[in-house]
Length: 494
Image 1 (tube, one colour):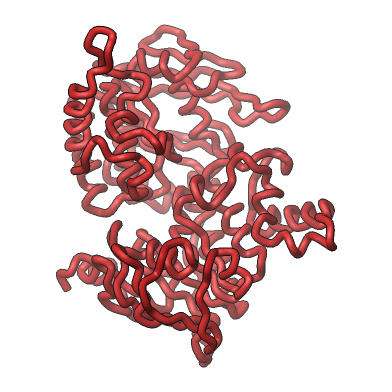
Image 2 (image 1 turned 180 degrees about the vertical axis):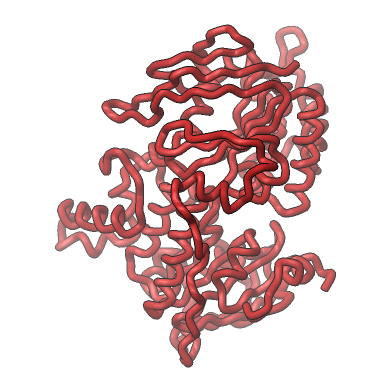
């Protein structure tokens, strides 16, 4: 069942820019590899060549010693190679079962066999621990469920080599555990796994060997057991990486800039109260489905509210939409970067200034003003792009996230809500974002961070609000806070 993969002198050009340089290494059958590197290191591009979504500009790809040049992903899947994308690739208007078998439909004679596809879909969904009706439309799923459907779709192809690109970015700890059990079963059955993740604790736990890429080149490889997480991080960035979190500055003695009282969002959050002061970073923790994202979508006018009061600088407000909230000085970064955070087909410039067009129109839109704003954002946020004129879809996932953060800061907000701000971001970029968040607070902004990464909340925040089942469970000071305490409150076992 297993297969052997060889990359020999693989290079890739996009126009005049070379993004992969003479990459050489091999993947042995039946092992779990951690593929590491910063955003833009070339990991995803190399895996897209392996899985038929891109073709190499030079070099050879061999499968079991035979040179292959896949023209599309279908040809790679026929060879047993399947890629689970970092960004979701589901058709929202199709059902879960239809998405799983899209392009690989089961037939009975000339007709589609819907009964067989629903039954098979239930089976692969059960393998990933997702108990939902296969007839559910993809648009009705929450982000974590979409991720599990993507994994189930890959399993249905019966892959001999499976590439997982940030598969746990949206999953709860229990869902992640089930995924790891699945990976162990696949490995035992002889499947080769390439696991791309910036969560080094996961790489350390489940992989046999790491392969590190840097600046489009193969950097090194080593047995996982011989490399510490700290060494992995240093290998990724090519330098010593220390002080992951900035020093936590004291919160100024001031009245809250944002005060929320008994806010309810039907079906998601019930009578939640909190406040945040200028210069303070407040975190929101909880399991997937706890209602954190939906609470803030209700606050910002993206979902209907049912009661509750919101005060900004002591004055009652009610936001009709995110644009209305931005005019009042409150902006929101969505957890769904591709679906809600950016227009990925738009250029970097168009994305950046979309929330703040009034600043660049006097009264007509001034392209020079927009270009100056983009140059500042590229420098300030470290957005890596070969051409400032490209569309956002051509950026790596981490650079898309940096662009999305820059976008929500363009209107100059006093309160910033960042939902999963480092999802899909490499360890070096994470550190940059942590220091950026600290600078925002030091500059007098109130910052709210919604995150599934508990150490992120502990390392950054002054206080952490824990939600469970739509209710506020506890508000905990950062001093002495542990992952165990947060999990206990989030699961109701405290």
